Length: 244
Image (cartoon, rainbow, N blue to C red; front, side, top):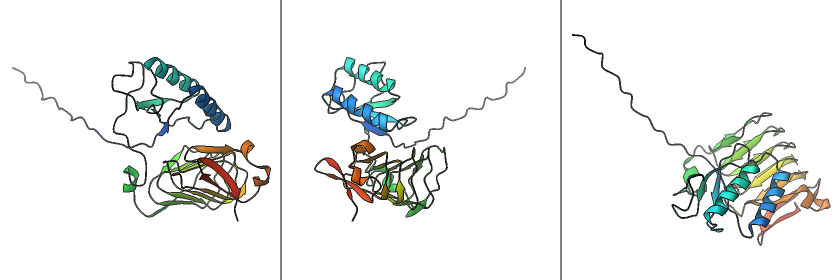
């Protein structure tokens, strides 16, 4: 009689990971919202490439067929919806992304507040993938931000001691301070902080945004180009003003 060797059973290992996703919250009339999104994409091509996006439908409350059409319209614009929230369980069709429950805003008082230590520095490189820094309240970049670089810091302010090149971007939950020339894109208050601001010594920005409200180079006053400016929200509008 022969005996078989015992089969080793390996336990399945699960790991929990947290990701920062961008939430798109369409509003009625949907056609105007799509037009605004198209203007954003035109001024920031590739912004959504490789970024997880959650579709928040709490304000829109569309029918299932409209959700299918909206997800398809976003996909045609290179935006991949990873999950949907804000609608009733069972309201989504089988061909739609999964429903998301229990999501929380990525605020400093939320999941990201557990990050430590108190400071961090990063040196971006040309063509690098987006860098998400969570290790401090303020991220200081002491080298120029090169074209193609992306810095994402969802735990406070970002300070850039040099220039920010065309085709680069900085995303921060807090304010953004550029002590050189800002030529790329700067998005402050990305976690819903409407008190965040953008400061730069010389404004040649492609786009500036605070808490989702944005201005492009074409929207800015001619006198603000090449000048020291700050950008902030005032009464629901993004203001670009001289920095005195």
